[in-house]
Length: 252
Image (cartoon, rainbow, N blue to C red; front, side, top):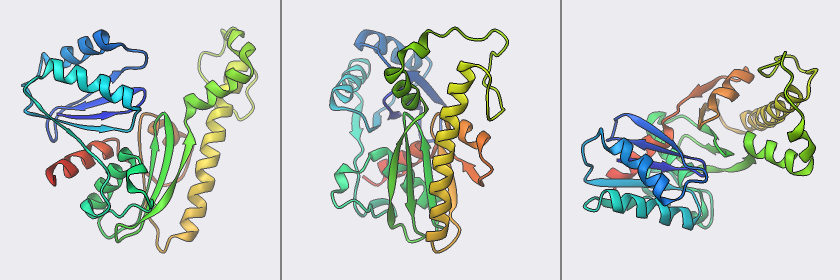
């Protein structure tokens, strides 16, 4: 079993190429998370090893480890880490351990899938990360941006009265127009435009700086949002981190 643990969502892959299950574990305590985990396990064969990618605080790592240990006491736990040489990827960070393991594993998978091509990986999760790698596996660095949820939360923190504005019954979904005529759509279109515009600017600059046209890969829970709002030639690869986990686990 492979578990990709983000701040808001767990992705569980049953086996190297098996079904992927999702658990939204925001605010879950141990009993509730345990019940959700056991519900998935009830329909599966018992794994001998559980492999983790956990770019989350230590307290959440402990919670996740305890839940898995209680449900699968005989299973070996393998917590993946960043390596400077394994997987054909050379992180740019001087302190490789400070590079997010999810970002690293996405690059490991990209290196294997698109060998001899430079790549740019955009992960549209709780945070948005953008990482570039040349055709030889040399990481060129990356950026971290607030995700859509973080942008909304920041706005509501500074302007809490916006939360109290009732929705317009004639506008149930964000309008496609660039200048909406109600507050709900104004917020949604605004945060989408801000994030998409920022990403497009970054990718345009990268295209000029990289030696050849890269593969533009996008993954993460909001990947579809980005793909629907831009005309950039993005290739959606939703299992990139999980694929990297399979590769990294097999080499340790």
